[in-house]
Length: 358
Image 1 (tube, rainbow, N blue to C red):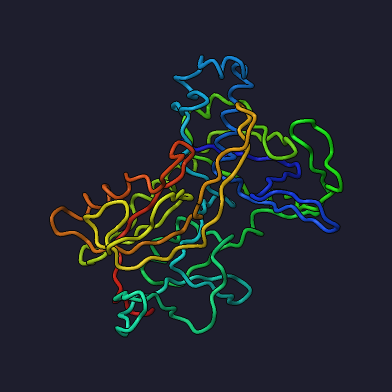
Image 2: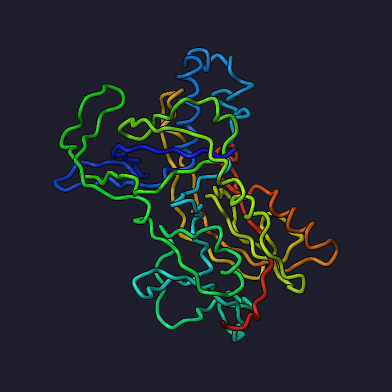
C-alpha cells in the first residue's frame, strides 16, 4: 500500500558518519531519509501509538512488527518522491545527464563491443551517445512515466533533488548519548530542508495504515501520513514496462539500496542467479550504513551499502520464456541483509545493445 508523507516544517535527516570536534564542522544532511531510518521510525511510531517499548522488548507485538531480533509483517518495499502528481524513482546509472535549455535531460548509455584489449576482459563497454562529461547520477530523479521512452532510446527530462526540497542552513549541537550532555566544541552547521510546493515523500509499506502520524528526523518533526491510491497505477508500471521480444539481453536495475557483504562479481555469471551470464554492470562507490539501535541502546553494525540505480546487463536465457525470466529476477531480493526494510528491490526489462540513435 502506498502512503504520502508531508510536513510544512523544516526537517533534517543526518547522514552517515561521526561528528568530530574541530573549529569548522558540517554535518551531512540526507533526503530522502535512508531506508533503515524510515523503517525504524515507522516501527517506533507504531510502538508509541499502539503500545510501549517494554512490551515490544518482551515480544508482545511479534506478529505485527516483529521483535528486537526478527522483523514481523511490517515490511517497507519502496521510497519514492512525487511532484505535481508524478512519481519519481532514483535515476538509473546507465544514463548520461546533460543540461539543455535550462533543464536536465538524460539518455541511456550504449553497450558496444570492446576492442579486445581491456584489462577486465569485458566484451562490451558502456559508452555515451552525446559528447561531453555526464553529471553524477546521484540526487537525480526520473518520472516513472518516462521509463518506456528512455529505454526506447529517447532523451527525456529528469529532475534534481532541488526540485523536491529547499535547503536552509542551520546550527546544531552534538550530545553524548549516554549522559545527554553537550560534547565539548560540538557546535556544527547543517542544512535543513523544506518540501517544495507540490512535492511529497511516498512510501510503499504494509500496515502503515495503522499510523495516525509519523514523527522522525533529528528534530522529531511530525509528518502527516495518508493513503496515496492515486499513485498506485504509476508504481505498477515498474512491473509492466514495454518489452522487446527480439532482445537477447536483460537489464536489471536496483530501485532501492543494496547491502552487499560478500563478492559482487565472480566467474562471469550473475551474482544472484548463476543461470544468467553477466555481460556488464555499472556500480556506484560503496558507502557505509550505520545507525543507532534504540531498543538495545547501542550502535548498529556497520554494513557496506550501494545506492539505488545499479545496473546489470545479463544474457537472456533460452530454456524459459521471457516473462518467466523477468518474474524470476524481480522476485530475487538483491541485498544480503535487511530485506524487511526495503533493500534489494529491482526492476527488469529487455535490453538491446544495437539500438540506433534517435
